[in-house]
Image (cartoon, rainbow, N blue to C red):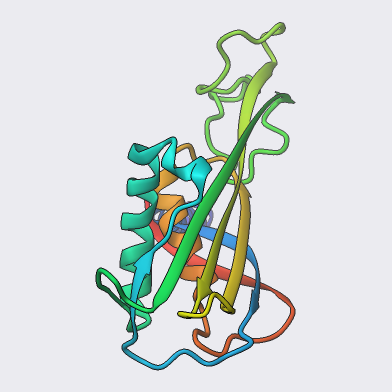
Length: 197
């Protein structure tokens, strides 16, 4: 009887831990920031676009909307003709690779009842025990210039993960890039941001 109780307790703990992990995802981001000048709290800014960004206004507008939300969290306000100018950019690279029996899938889900096959991402695999795993490498950059054009803040954040929902991940990365604003720590650091599942 005590073995049954022990097994039940272990199962309950496993279910509890699994449900807790399923509610949030962790975006672990490598961040490097530079702040040669302190920006006043509550400063107004406007977005500034590079010629390459003018060529893709739809995606750039989406990115700027995400950046606007992140900038509001640190007290900056968007306003036309503001002296502070902000450039935001993002790069994404997608890589597909074969994964044997789920090796390399960080969250470890998707097993098909003891057969070593994956329930997701296995279409197109050459062998039944192989699966295609897609990873996404992303980088966001924020550069702020004052009215004279001097850079007063620069931050870059990069993350590699398995989640395809770019907007949610980019929003977390922008929050990470602004952590510690307006005087972030020097050097490269790891910033973890939790996002809902």
